[in-house]
Every structure is written in C-alpha cells, then in structure tokens.
Length: 435
Image 1 (tube, rainbow, N blue to C red):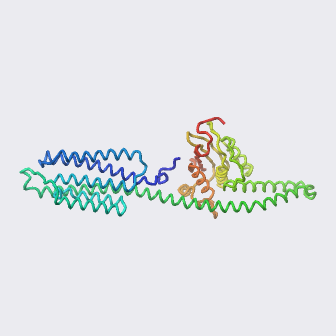
Image 2 (cartoon, rainbow, N blue to C red):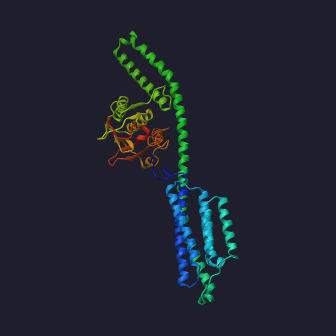
Image 3 (cartoon, rainbow, N blue to C red):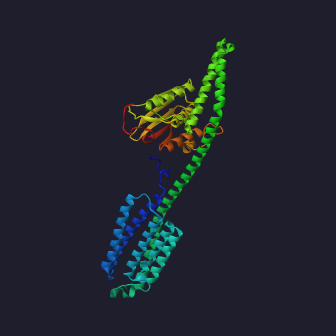
C-alpha cells in the first residue's frame, strides 16, 4: 500500500533512522578530519605523534561506521538506546585520540561539546546526562593521564600560539557542524511531528466515522418498520376498487411503491455498510458487471442525468463486490449531479497493483480551498449544514482498504475524482484475467 510521502507515509521511527544516518555521515567527516589533522601535524608541522596507534583508532571508527551503514540499510527504525551507544562510542574515540596527542593541552578538547550538543538534541534526559557525565569524566582524566606532545625545537617557544590557533579552528568547526547537523535533525523531527499530528487527526476522523455509523445503523433499524408498514398499506391500496378504477391513482401508487422500495434498498445498504449483512455472503463478480450495475441503479434513481461508462482496453480480475465501495461511488455520482453536471463519465482502468475508478463531470469543479481540504468532514461548496460528509466517507472507506483518493479540476472546467483500490484488498486474482 502506498500513500503520499508527505507526513502521510512517514514511518513512526523514521526520524530515528534518519538521525542515525546523519550521525554516520558526521562520523565520516570526523574521521577524514582526524586523519588529515594527524598527518598534517606529524609531517608538515613536525609534531611527532604516535601515527600508528592514532590511525588504528581512526580505522576502528571507520569499521564501526561501515557496520552501522550496513545495519541501517536493513532497518526501518532506530531506538534511542542505539543512538546513545553511538554517541558514547564517539566520545570514547575522541578520548583515545586526545590521550595520544597531549590530553587536556590539546585545543581540540572542545569537541566534547559537539557530542553533548548532539545528545541534547537527539536523546532523552537520562541519556544526555550520561553523555555529559562521560564527557566531563574523560576531559578531567585527560588533565592527568595523557601522552605529552613531542614538539620540535622550532615549535618549543610557540606552543601558546599553536593552542590559540587550534582553539579557533576547533570552535569554528563545532559551530559549522552544529548548524548543518541540527538543521537537518530539526527537519526530521518536524516531519515526524507532522506525521504524528496526522495520525491523531485520522484517529479523530475514524472515531467520527464510528459514531456516524452507529447513528446511521440505528436510524436504518428505526426506518425499517415504518417503511415495511407503508409498503403493506400501498399494496392494499393498489387492490382497492376505489384505486383500481382510477388509472391516475394507480400510477401514483406505483410511483410511491417504487420510492418505498428505493428507501428500503438504501436502508439495506446502510446496514450492509455497517456490517449487518443479514447473512448475505459478499458477491464475487467481474469489474464490468459491478460498475455497470452501479451505473444502472444510479440512472434509475436519477432519470434524466446522463452517465457513461468507459472500461478502456484492459482485462480485469474478478473482485469482491463490497457494498461499501458501491456506496462510495454512489456518493461521488451524487456529488457530481449536485454540482450541476450535465454529463458524468465513469472511467475504469487498472495498473499492476490497483483498480482505478474515476468519476469525471462538467460541473462547477472544486475551489482551491476544497482541493486543499479534500476529504475532510464538513468541507463543502454547497453551503448547507452537514455538507461534505459524502467525500469524507469516500476517502475514509478507500483508505481503510489500503487505497487512495485524489481530486482535480479539468482544464476546461468540471472535476474528476479518482479511486485507487488495491487488488490485494478487492481482487480475487493478482494477475490479469479476462472476465
């Protein structure tokens, strides 16, 4: 199932994975910077460093980074504990390099602040204080335990100047990395918050649907009895001599009986949609029969409104004719009629994964506000109380099936709404078969 990749398709823990990926990128930058600094200081500045142990530390960091990248490619989520351990490893790696290069006298001691800043942004309260405690402890120990720098005679009198330059380089690097990294992390977190906000909105909408379903089901039960009584009375009237002797009255009684049958069909549809199918099994049928049946019933209920069906050159699998889908398409056709359309087309197509049904009309179309709020309850261009629930129900019915609904305006007026129904939810076969 695919939805929009806005916040809509955002996995719940995608922000953690993306942030870990950023940490991996940052570690590559750190490794490259460390190796370049070690080689420059040793071979250019003539500061005699223990090259082999320091390159081993950088090599271990690179190996861990390669392993982290391989794990991330197979993962869709990353826990806070894993991010915490990753930052702990970076603190220990930095400590090892500082120990081999002057300890607390090394101006790059300030790089501990980068790890603390990242921890404050990415971790919970207990974890970030763990990073602070470890960083502070390591920095303190480096004041007593370290390998002193082995400077050449030319640099002996310029140690303070070197420290000032190194401190400036370190602070500038920390500032640049924090701005770049924290900006990207903030965007990841904002996207996750937007995703969670959408989930809360969907939960509220689904609760709204449940309440409407309960009300509709209750109303359908309540209407069933009076409709049956009216049908019985009309049947008796039709056989009364006072009625049979007047053709005009016979015709009117027939129209009333047809209207009552239409009302009973609507009530039955509501009960079916609410899961009260009175024991009927779902109907397995062809796409063409299903769509043409909907069109036939809609034309009968709306005489004088032209409706054309186009199935294209495709073969379709057999599907389960869910009455909920039927009602959703009915809602779209009714909306097109109420928008003033003089013709309506139902266009049926397919791709490898879904059955696509489009309703196109030449009515007034959607306003930009309606398109922006498409599928939200009580967003309607009809200006009447309770409007907008038809499209709201359509969107949620299709979404429950794992599909999607999109709306657009035609280049020459009118509107088009497209339902994409996955064959995994409605089809009996996944391969193309003739009907």
